[in-house]
Length: 407
Image (tube, rainbow, N blue to C red; front, side, top):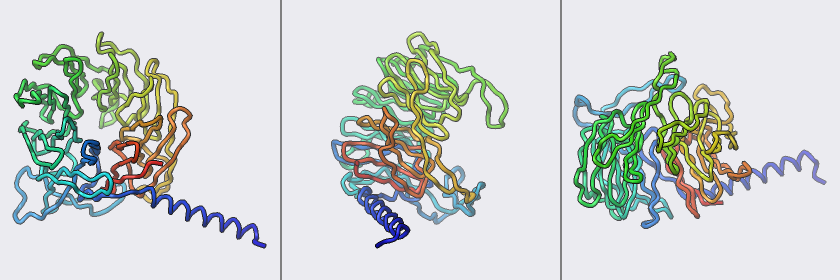
């Protein structure tokens, strides 16, 4: 008769085998994004063509000396709390690629649209075309069926805020602080307006333009005139750990009905009435990291340790979705749980989000029960997953894109 000790060992082995096999079945494909150090843009799924669009970064050695202002490739020399780097005589070439969602094979790849691995915008889609910005200063319209460039506009500076597009307009902002509005069909420039440093997506809503710059939220009309401006004055600690005022807005603006939700360096989550331009409430959230999303009267936002859901009416914290995976940091210390600084995605009453602790989580929204966790060996952060009826797709610091079968 088998001893209890041997029985326990056998059970553990069986469980490990089952887990291992199930994990292999769950991963449908993995795509190498090239030489990028970190995935910081959101993959885009286009159901019309069954493709996932993202950036791929290739590196080529220069046969000449680096030119002034040219961005070249850093090389990591040592790992640890302080990572040392040196610049190599190599250059980044950023290409937008479309991957077949069934097998991860390349359907098309654009010509080079950028020359770094980070100063790139997440792609947007409308009516057969993809819209994207990058550090080559251009906003580009790309045919989603073949990757050919149909139209480009040189804005004069990096465009890494996501481009907004709808039936009538294309809207973009650049690092130099200009907002551009084009007629989508004719590509006529309707206005160019100097606002201030633009890092996050601007939008057109109900015939007006909304966006943020530094510690301000703007409302413009379609002629580019400022209709309203809200200025944050709360205190915060700056990079020198000194107390300061005018905290920069750090999240994308989330619009729901007549309200706008956002976070700032003050570590508050704000609810702004954009009809009366008054703050309805603000909730102190230590180290709020991701942009907020809305679902069923709740605001979901990532923090240093978990994802939380707040009542959109009152700002009261209602739910907490914990991270609990064990991982090893650069100092070879074991840690448990991690930051959620990539935007969450909600689909079919399940919230999906990645964590700095090397895990992708799927939680039931209502009862906070963990439905499943998918673990890799790299941070999953700064980017939001794609979720459909059939799969979940996400990027990670392994410079790969992963696609999992739905459970």
